[in-house]
Image 1: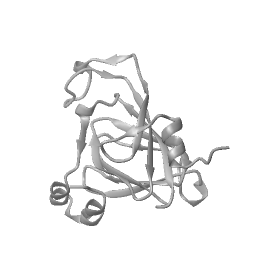
Image 2: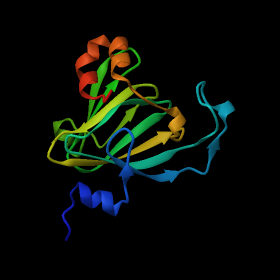
Image 3: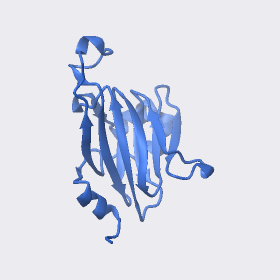
Image 4: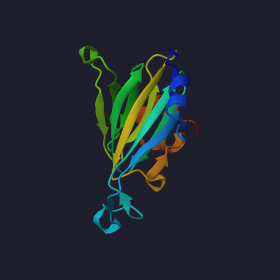
Length: 169
C-alpha cells in the first residue's frame, strides 16, 4: 500500500498548484446559475450556485491572506490539522482549528463569511492537510482578492504580526 503523504494526494486527486499557495482541483460546479441581478452588489456577472474544491497544503507552505465575495465552507479530510486565520470586517482576528479531534477544539467543518480575510497553514510543519472548500455563490476568480501586506497592515494595524507572517508581498 502506497504511503499517503502529500505527494500521494496530489497525484491521486490530480491536484494543480493554486495561486494562493498549495494545490487544488475543482470537483464540482453547479449547473444552476444565479443571475447577476439576483446577487449582492459587487458581483460582476452570473455565478454558479455553488462550487467545491479539494485543497492541500504541506509543510511550511501557507495560503496567503485573501478574501472572497462569497461564503466559504471548509471541510477537513486527511493529514495534520489546519489553522485557518480569519480577520473579520471590523478587524477581529480568530483562528479556526480544522481537524478530526473535537475533544481538543478541532472541528471537521467551519464557515468563513464573505468579505473576511483568511489565510491558512498546516498545524504540523512536517505534514500536510487535505481539506475541501465549498463556495456559494460559486467561486469565480473575479471575486477573489489577494491581500497585500502593507495595505492590510494599514487597515488592521492591530493584526500586523499575523499579516506579516501570512502574506507574500
